[in-house]
Image 1 (cartoon, rainbow, N blue to C red):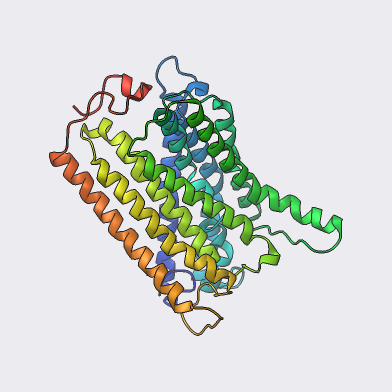
Image 2: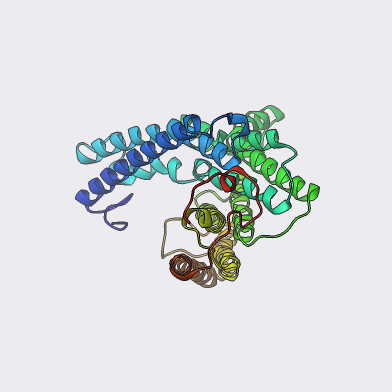
Length: 374
């Protein structure tokens, strides 16, 4: 499918099938976003206002709202590209033009919207680990909202770079859209991390196993957001290189680690069994190493001008075989980590230690009300 039916694919029927499948996936994501958005708005515990909702719920709300604003644009573009490909292939470039029109949906900063929930997981878990209330709850809400400002990129369906040349007026004209599209999401992430650090400093931290993969995952997401800000500077010369792929890998695998931490944290509430602390921490660390191996070599290769979307017939100074080998090894290690995580969950559900009513001493709503697997 990737070779014959994806962007630039050579099999016309497979390209059509790819576009239809992608459209159906978008429809499913839209349905899920509507469900999530309406659930947070209407299905809260009696007496709880939005201002008091957990940060995971808040991040789900703003993330779903951003998806509801951006995914229809993506769906409309897919329809145009599909019609163009199936018939005349003039306006949208046929199979070769798919990524020209849809690339914005699969790269930064649009991808920041897909992982905003990960920041909500960190924001909810940090006060539990710190044994203290979040002293700047409003700032966390603002930070989560700023991350989703990446949706403004959908309006123009393009990336905005910084060209630091010419007169002061030219620089200002270039900097304003660059900051709006790339630096506001970074500022939001910095605010969320700063408030998390403040909560840790104001309490008496007691490290819990799920916090390891969660914190490591958000750190990887930060590497992606920072990388995007650097990549969009024209003078860095990173456009069209594998640097963008590395940023996307940091973002994707970072969100996987956060999901692993969230599963270890809230899983006992769902199925009544604890995951092994050794497995939770160990797989989190291995996943972090795998992500760095898969991404960092391509950050370096990007500065060496290794082109993107080309598997052979390129050359540049530096150990290109080493970078590609390390990246491939990182992806393979991450796949093993995911399989090991699935096995850990299955084993815990079959023969794990029974969870107590509040295993993390969180004293938050989800651990206080009746329910869950017992």
